Picture 1 (cartoon, rainbow, N blue to C red):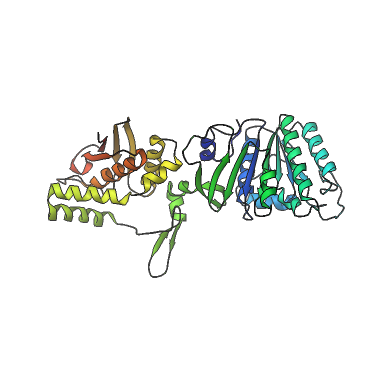
Picture 2 (cartoon, rainbow, N blue to C red):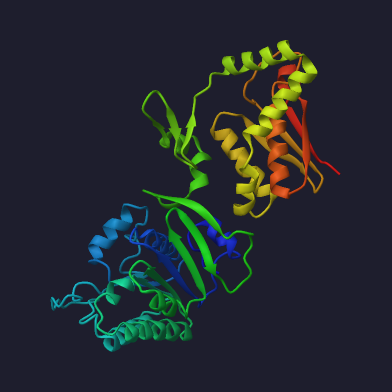
Length: 395
């Protein structure tokens, strides 16, 4: 299997794409699809595969600089396991010669013959085309060009080679876009902050085969990864007008940095005003309200309960909520252990974190579609070695 450079994407299609298959990375004029395609090629090079890139979009030095700005550095592989064919310099009739320069990219017969000969001579494993829309707009015979692309992809696959092709959907007419995608085993749409698998020869592993992403100096990254580390959270906290603070990592969400003693006093006030039973009930309901919608979102983007919960644990750790770990997981029982949960404290009479139990109960209810209830059965504030949250499915 060949990784596509993003674990979440590999997981959707069962671990990566099959050797000798073809993948269309479809996108818009933002070219996020191009970045993801090169991430996949870069990952393949790091795994020891040989890659031939045909660059129609811009001069190769400019391509390398652009990719370097997004975390893809081909420097260690150029001239060894990586070759770039320059399909740009003569695209507009400049007549540039030299090694690895296509003499007349618009002559589809000569161009495809050179590409296939280079593939076999260099014993490359993967052909990468960046991107086919650049030539499409210059062709007088659009249908003939689409047929040539289809033949090139299919003939490359017949040689046992894997093909990665970037396709700018904004450029192709509807029927031409559908036709140019015909020979591809996998179609991955990358645009507008969402990666979605539109076609795959093997059954997909999640109910909704798509996830949110951001494009930054590290390339195409899962949006959820940005709030699973302190650095990610800090990078996406932005001040707004009028004294507001916004978290841009997952959604545009207004947030506030909370001080521990203030949070603890709020919880103590609730207990003092309502008493231990009703106070705990209010804190529990508060936690459930905080997590409305999280389980539904995670269900669409996670492969199972364990992965979904561990993602939440990463966020809790990064945001200062404390360290959580899964102790027991079954269809009807989940036990979570916590250390240093927020807020902390010693010598208190009642548990300080019923809201955590409510949050996880709400999350599991949405994720599984079955009702769950939870309780903080141990609390460090009451002298226990750790906090413990026990969640049970309501029969």
